[in-house]
Image (cartoon, rainbow, N blue to C red):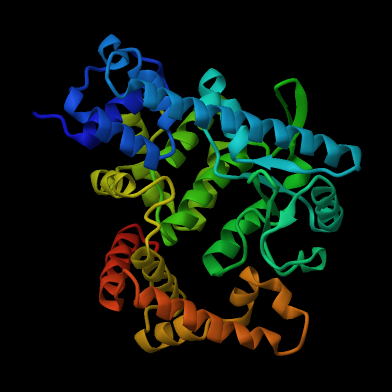
Length: 400
């Protein structure tokens, strides 16, 4: 059977994750494999693995590939050093931030963690420490990207910050958020998470993170959250499998199953485990039969690390979420698209809650932005088709 771009990429990714010998990949697929690795945010990991082939190192494009991989790795090292310094400042201020996802996942990867980049870093802080954490961030050169204030802690589940060098950080008061009933149910599992936090030694510094059971659930729920939106790629699944493999003895698996059953996520989880075991070489415990793992894998490889980010996909994700929140009633779904609830609008624009009725100005802003998308590279029909396909996919998993 002839090897194509996707099978070649999976073969290389599996060998990198499991530290197995590099499979032989035809030269005509190298550029395609690297392009997919870039979209899936594993470029440095894939290029380093491919460099085990002497013929790859003699390739005319190898120097360019090497420079790009080194740039990604050094950028992540600088970002992480900045985060460790910031965590130290917060601890000196008597605060208790918890590291989520990025750094904790890199620790689980071990030596190859240096090749696992983050688009931004995530910290969880209690609502009572949110204002003080905000002050530390500002003192350290970070600015809130959105028009938000420390007093808005109860209106948002996170605020995005950026420093002058482009380092992005999400300061969370809730790991998942309260955007809809599904998210609220998932988020409730992290009530009291600070009381279950555990220390983690990373690069000579002690930081604190979610306990293994909470963190494993977070990795699953975060993936699910993106499934409802723009989608997700193969890297989040690799993070999930690597994390489980590293902390299997500390994860209370029955609690995980109970939470997944309550949130109607077991069918999806079974397929994720199937893909991790069959295609990525892991040995996660399986519970029940898989449903449609090959279709799910194709979906994961079709976009980037967090799905497709074009205007068609963005509009389609709004349609999908509106339909689910309206119980698939077409008129109600259309109404929610045009006039979403006040709390949904204020999640992204909390400053509009400061004055009575000011939040109503967000509706024309939303309509203008939507009109620009419609007049750009998308059409309502394309987005509607994409949304229907996603809803059908979600329904197969009992999530729609």
